[in-house]
Length: 191
Figure 1: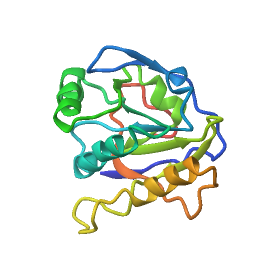
Figure 2: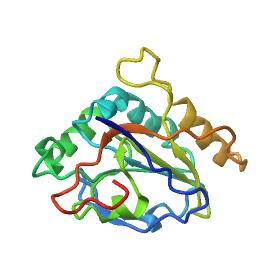
Figure 3: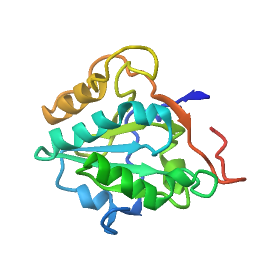
Figure 4: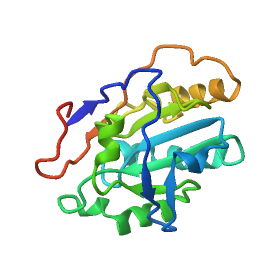
C-alpha cells in the first residue's frame, strides 16, 4: 500500500548520520559532503515497485550531478530480516547494476530514517550549503502505472535552484511509495 512522506518542515537542519556504504565499506557522514553546495539524501530500497519504477532516473541523477557541487547519498532503512531483498548484499548488487556514482548505505538501526522522519521509499531531502532543508518531496509526477514519464523534473528543478543560489520555487508535493519496513516494535509514532 502506498503512503506519503510526512514532509519534514522546510528549514530543518540536516540530521547527522554515520553510515557505511554497502559497496565500498567506506563510512559517510554530513562532513563527507562539507565542500558541496547541496546535499541530496534519498531513502530508497531494492524491492519497492515505486523505487524500481524510478531507479534509472536515480542513477541518472548521480551521473548528471557527479561533477557538480551536489553531494548525494542513498540510504535503505528497511528491515533486512523481513525483507531480504533489502539486505546489504542485495543493495550492493543494485548499486553495481545501476552504476550508482554515490554511496548507498544501510541504516541498520533505522535511527537515521527516524531522524529524517522518512516514511516511504523513495523519499527525498535536499539541503542547501548551510544544510537547511529546502526541498522534500517527489521526484516527479510519475508513478507505477500512471503512464507519466519519469523525468525527475521536480527534484532536478530544486537542485538547479540551490546550485544557482536561488530559492526553490513551486509547490512541493510529498513523495509517495512503499512504507519503510520497520523492524518489529521499532516503528516511529509518525509511521
